Length: 125
Length: 125
Length: 125
Length: 125
Image (cartoon, rainbow over all chains, first blue to last red; front, side):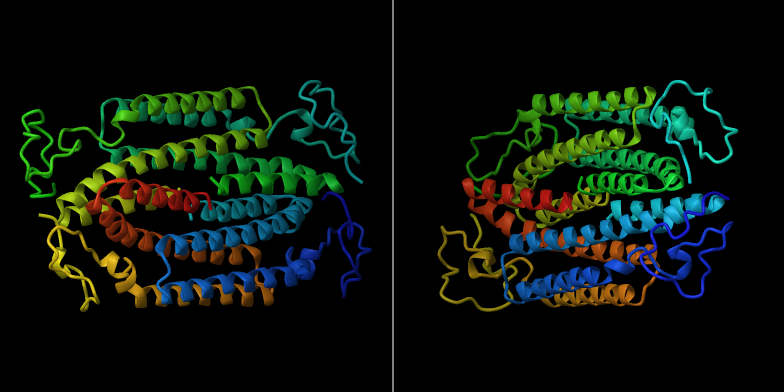
């Protein structure tokens, strides 16, 4: 209803979609490009580092390391996971939620509710 | 395409905005109506209940109640605060962030970054 | 200096306990003095400060302060509550749990399980 | 009247320590048996499951799964890590802290302070 904003954030050409269609909001999201797409490599690198931390924890348990030192490493891993979640969430808000806002209607309410529930789950852990 | 942004944060001069101006997106936010405005009474009720819980904690300490029971009440109060924060955040995303999306440009990025930082602060407590 | 475990849970008959009886462990806890007793004033001061923060939140909502600023204040209040809980927990471990350890037997297991559950509730909020 | 706790939880013979020495508190802990020793296999199994979850996250990112679903999986992994930490902490309190209490003196204060700090780090993530 609003905007065309057409291609506002589009970094490249897009296959099959007519960006010229004036009255329609077409976004990256419609093109199957999720918010975190461009950061994919960075995300995978982060997650591999966290996987390494978890393997480090196994080694610590196996070698009878002092409990408190293991707990410190658990805190570091949890923090790394939370930080990954925050980054993902930021991209989600920037792309999916903003996208829904452009389309207007009930879509944005549904997306915001969904995002808030995800934040609630993160808070409760 | 959007906005004039005129009076973006101005809490006054509300009805003075021309809602009829076709090509301009004017939102509640421009009129100084923050997301949580309509739930104000509900929010105040919630906060008064939390204040009561904190006074209850003082009574418990004063009456030498068993530590674990006090801790349980602290958890309940923290949960109530988090739940208040989530509700506020949901309204913020629905109104301020979606509003910024309609206006396009750098505004939405700034708002999303600001919201993400606030979520990060909630997570870290 | 240790144990017989005599009077383990007895909250009554406080001054009636013979502290001189060599073979009996009598602790502050037996005398109805919980761990946090000596810090009572400090605790009450802390809680009154938190109560003030909650009232500050009500004022902020009432005066339509910007959502993000309210969320920042919520984070501060939650942090203050967690910090109060940690202090209480430390005193509880130092007094009640250590006390149970001196008495030996199943008591310490029960106390540790109870404390761990309380920590779990704090973590989940 | 204290302990030798004669082999109370000791799963095996103990090298070099005289359990007969009446006036000395000798605990499992002195024998290099940390609290989590007996649960080692369970801990390793748990951690391997968490490692699997982290690898699952990598697959999800790689396959462009919807952000919210990834966040849900992050919450599950964080919860699993917290739950592992709680179990470790419980065993630590049961063994190391209780052990320090038996020895008395400054030891228990140091151990409780150390444990509380570890709990604080867990809370802040």
